[in-house]
Image (cartoon, rainbow over all chains, first blue to last red; front, side, top):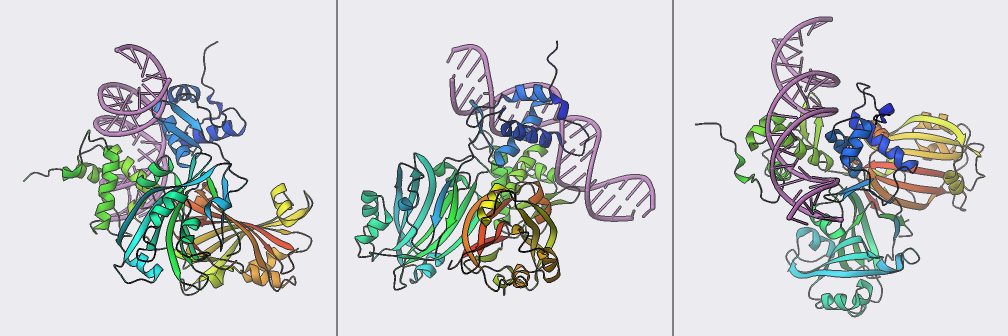
Length: 249
Length: 249
DNA sequence: CCGTATTTGTACGTATGTATC
DNA sequence: TGATACATACGTACAAATACG
């Protein structure tokens, strides 16, 4: 018996492009467990044979599924089925990084990547109620849970008031603990704006994502209980690994 | 003078793929106003000539920018630069569709697309605290602002209590007004879970998006002031047109 | 209303580069 | 080092949708 293509469900000139049909086939194969999570798909050439199309047509299907966050292609290794479960990250009046993930990840930490003093941009100055160009400290940090990157935050603090917060942050690995050293025993989230976009090159590297991955972006201002702004932060979350759970603000 | 390619900044074997370099060039051209918002790019063949590459290489660059939400390609017409401003949609304890967009859009409405009675899935039954399989009414609606689709909601209500809510919804175009007819004068948002993903085929059609577009997804439960769940809803927002502003929950 | 030109979309082929095993 | 597998880039042809005379 010859090794015929199993392409019974792939139809030409059906109004649906071959690559879309193949992508749907792959999704179906994943759904029924034919292709399993965290395992490699057959090589592109094998899939091309199976569906009776050119390798490029299979590539178009795979590219679409990589975009959709279903697959991950690694040059020289293979194409893998990603797992679907997500961490649920709480957002609310008292959002704290490590506290929020309790019970979902056994090991959580925040890694300081960079700390720089710079003049405040208009956006930062407005949020922190500072004069345009006043010195601010910018902290770049990555949140990790069980060894996986789950967030990437850029925060700004007034440089004069929080001089040395970078050292505190490097030592404690916690914004909350660092702020306490500066007499901030409590703080609240004043505002949060949420959007989503494709990860840019920096996000891809920092969060270990594939091109086309989606990041959820929160832009927030934290204030002391009496309403004084102390932190302005933009945080990117990989949408394929994190969902945000809104609690009381 | 010959019509030389203006490809001074496109370099081969530089470690960066040609399509990525061209995508970046296009972004730069948009930034400096060489290509303008809401106008067509030169045809693919013209760009291929300009950059001194094959048409497919230009197509790869355009595909990436379509993914990133910067461009929109239309068969037979051309490729267009999208505009960047977003509606800011408030999410909070008293989120209401039309009220939230006041001042941002002059014309707002909610269009009922479909109303169906069906047995509750496990997810819906759990959220509404109903028995598995109890009848629920599913409403499919699209939110529009100034003629553009800005949301796509799927809502479930207990069928017995809210029989006829589809008619009320079709008539009033408002969930709030429809619920009032059933004695619900006030309701609160109990929980909201937020995620993002690529739009699926249905989203693309309903929200008039291009393949690869991103949708913000909220899954929410609304309850009466005494805590009784009355509505379970999943809403998709096109990320390129909407951001979510979290207010007091 | 029809036919033609323009423009993007799909599909094939081939060759070579690059990363992994 | 060689073999394997994905990535990039070229070429060609035709299909499909739109624009325009």
